[in-house]
Image (tube, rainbow, N blue to C red):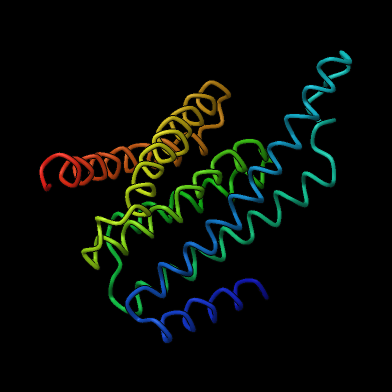
Length: 217
């Protein structure tokens, strides 16, 4: 609850101080935090998996220790706090779209379902998609300010396409496939919906990149 309240005040303070881009700054902050948490936790999990596998004493429940549980819990709480406050903020300022509603709803369902059933690997792997956040919001800023000729925009746009394809298209597609094969249908449904909507958004990014690099000189 404290994180949720803090998140609510943070997004409103940023919006008040910078009405035009405050929400984007807030989202970038959360993206950085969640990327670090999820990737570091997956690194810990994979090292533990390799150790158990090499020692030939691997069992599923042995991988889910208290430290991994705490990391997954913190990551889940921060993620849900961001999703809830961001949704309410868009509703209050009447900037919510159907795509935002679907994305935030499916992400929330996937997080809650994964944590409740202790599928921490699905949860943490899905949240690594937030690594695309900072580049996405910076490119949005440059696009709105018509400042697309600076070197930072060019680097960010290339990284955005690369990260988006790896961490949202391949990643969400793989989680959908793995959860379906594992008969975890709640996660499959939400992740497959996220996969579809992110394919649509990726198509938009490709078109914008084509417009910037090949049409507008």
